[in-house]
Image (cartoon, rainbow, N blue to C red; front, side, top):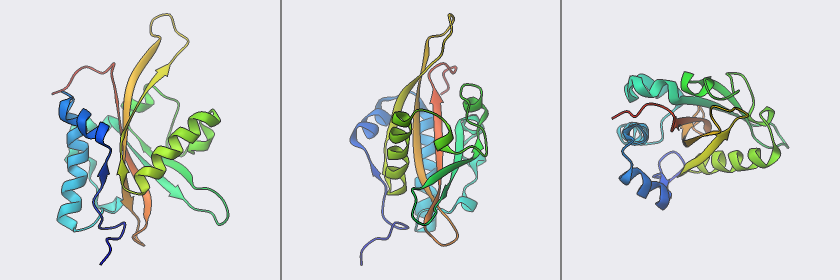
Length: 173
């Protein structure tokens, strides 16, 4: 029997796997490990309602965001931010209720949509980027984002849960 998107294992990008093995930032492992542990207990990918961000650890709460995937007949997917943690809103303009396609430049949107589409298919990678400001005190901040799929009530991937960790945060062990 072929695995369905609900039961197939995640495919972790080799560069991401190597980074996770080497990094001292343990929150990445807790984020991914929580999802993998929940999927193992359920025997399938988790639904949005089955995820409890508090179980990932209080220090991850501000770095978590949740996206609803909206499908309209004949058009591309739209991604709406349902929940956005405080570590993210302190650095970026995104707020709950915003759509990804409202956020900026087309080239950036293509990159983000590719990352989201990969996560929907169960292909997981850590996207590492920099935020750039027009400021004399801070030119940029490096950060990483990981996205994981969540099922909806019809057992299709209807949501993504993400984690964004910024290099300007104090180190956490």
